[in-house]
Length: 97
Image (spheres, rainbow, N blue to C red):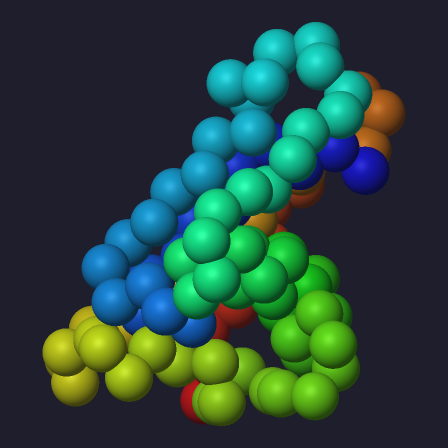
């Protein structure tokens, strides 16, 4: 699986929409998710796992528990993940309860 784009809103520490475009890596096959404690590194992995499986990366939280407490009440919590398997492209979108 090759990640293409993850788009998260009101998810984890991210109150606003956050888009990570892995396509900017080009042909590179290795990358590092880096940042200070609390900057949302694990939330990126949580977003991918939530999109694919409906749970956090550690399997300890479900979607309802991953809503950002920084988000406005009327902001929808959602994750969209685009990825490739060989030549095929897929998009998964999840909105927790």
